[in-house]
Length: 82
Ligand SMILES: [Zn+2]
Ligand SMILES: [Zn+2]
Ligand SMILES: [Zn+2]
Image (spheres, protein in one colour):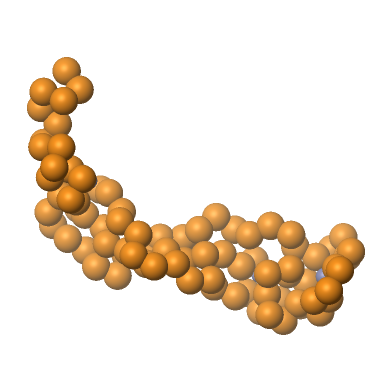
């Protein structure tokens, strides 16, 4: 099945993932509605065709040891939730 791949930056110290760009990973199956190899491009009524995309997959293209911008602005959490 096709799914979106989200390229982004993973911040190790807060485990937050910051998306930068999204692209579609094509499974190239003829029975997948989202694939460019789909054999019924118009008005597909085939029950066997896949109509769902897999959940998006995170692809960390950058890995940072520090916290993300949000967490830096928010501080280290002390006094925010308490
Ligand atoms: Zn697909
Ligand atoms: Zn189809
Ligand atoms: Zn964060």
